[in-house]
Length: 346
Image 1 (cartoon, rainbow, N blue to C red):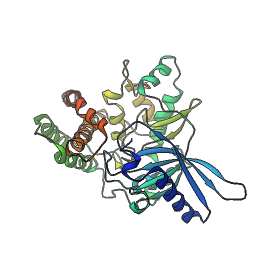
Image 2 (tube, rainbow, N blue to C red):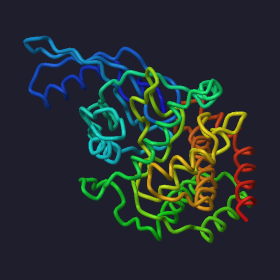
Image 3 (cartoon, rainbow, N blue to C red):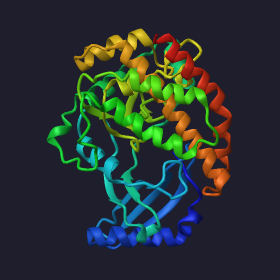
Image 4 (cartoon, helix red, strand yellow):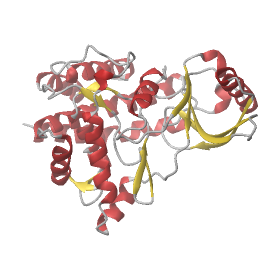
């Protein structure tokens, strides 16, 4: 996701200087950082390609990704702690993630929290681009997409130091804790009372499922949030919504209509039933379809809350990112989708 321009935090040269000084202080090696590209897309963290050059005997040069949690971003204020802790715990395991080289919430460096990560080889494809591969009969990426999610949900987070996550989450309250988070965002940004959303709040409270286990939940698991290279997923990206919760939540998010292609493949990759079957085999856990439908509804509620937040930020002058004006345009369709999911769940 991407937020406002670099100039809202610091000038490019100043940012390069401050980040270079930060890296030098942490490594004890004279370091220079050069920002060379801003990656577009999204509305939250600003993401840049950069190069670190260090004065070592071999003249170490490393391509990296710099992410800035700018105060005008969609989900501001930000902290690097949840994401960086989870990525460091997962790195080198069954879930491919970029290595976190540096992370700091010290706003004195560049004016906002920031992370420096290794640059991973690969490209990002949309659900519609993924669908073309599925149509050709190549299910390699689709299989990895499902197996990687299962590996994430099998990961024993209890053996890691993850203090930034909500350890009060239980099987019984996982859904309600997420609902409370997005209800708070909705209520802070609702321009006028919308009866459907308040009915949805009641429905989501009354139908909250009990989780089969408390697992790591990515929070935005879909096509467009992973890199692939030569038929292999090389990194899962965009972990800013990671939390502890019900594993069905990631399935419900991926199954939202907005991520389906014309043939109803989830994220353009695999039909829903096939995805459920493969996930169950890989995770060693039966998929509760009612729970997936519940989390599909909660995911739509979550997107609506975020879109309302973006629209409100523009209206109030808190964000200069005019792309956020477009978020309000999608609200009618999102609410129709939410109503449809709740009706199908009856």
